[in-house]
Length: 116
Image 1 (cartoon, helix red, strand yellow):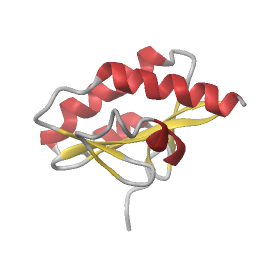
Image 2: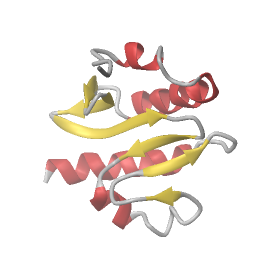
Image 3: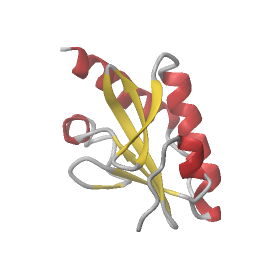
């Protein structure tokens, strides 16, 4: 049976060593962008909540996943051309710096979008 995580720290204790640093980095980027947000586990991965869940993230062997939802992916599709994306996810490769300003723009968009 799969582990049910209760905290982000519990989750991070299980991620592949190759992606741990990037996972910690994206966590800090999100924390700084939304200091009032609460860290939660949603769909068994880390998420940040401000009334509703704003964004999720997850660590994998070859990338860090960032999940801002489908609307955000559509809005920022021109900025995301260098990344693998799906309906609600962006994959940031481990061998490239995280795009901090883009992540911050997406988070600001999500805050505004969820407030409407």
